[in-house]
Image (cartoon, rainbow, N blue to C red; front, top):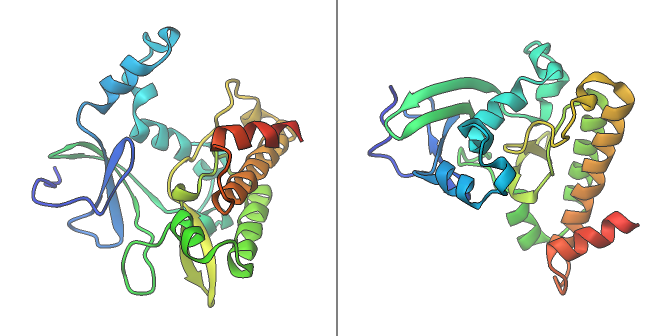
Length: 223
C-alpha cells in the first residue's frame, strides 16, 4: 500500500486529488475525493441510479480508456504515446484506490502547465495553435479515442523547443454504442467531432465569454 496521508495533492479536480508518487517522482497517483462517488450518484438522473460504482469512478473510467484497442495493442515505441502519459495501473493507497500514470513535467521538473492556464496568460498564439494542430493530426493518425478535449485536461511539455500537448484526463469513448471501436468510418467521424469541439472550446476560452460555454457549444453544433 502507498501511504499518501502525509502528502498534499499537487492538483485537485472536481472528482480526484492528484499526488506525486512517493517512490517515483515522474509518476502521479490519482485518488477519488472522499464520498465523491456517492455524491455523483445522488446527482445523477434517475435511470443511472442502478449503475455500479465504476460508472461514477474516474479511476475506473481512466483504466477503461487505457484499455481501448489501439492502446492495448501498442508497444513501447508506438506513436500512440507521443501525446499520452504512460499507464502503470491501479494501486491501493491510504486514501483509497489510486490510478498511477506518468506525471508530465516541465523543463524545471514541476508538473506541466495546463492548456487552460497557457491560454489565460498567452492567448491562442502561433506556437500553441501549431501544438493543437499537431495534437489533432495525432488523433487522426492513431485513432486514439477521447471524450471531450477540455483545456484543463491537456498539459504542455516542450519538445524540440516547441510546445507539445499531452492528454492527462478524458481518455476513452463517450459514445453510447461501441461502433467507434468496431468500425473505422465511425471512429473517424467520432474523432473529427471531438477535434471540432476542442477548437470550439479553445476559441471560447480566449473569447470575451459573453456566452456561457454551453451556449457557445450549442451554436458550434449548428454550424
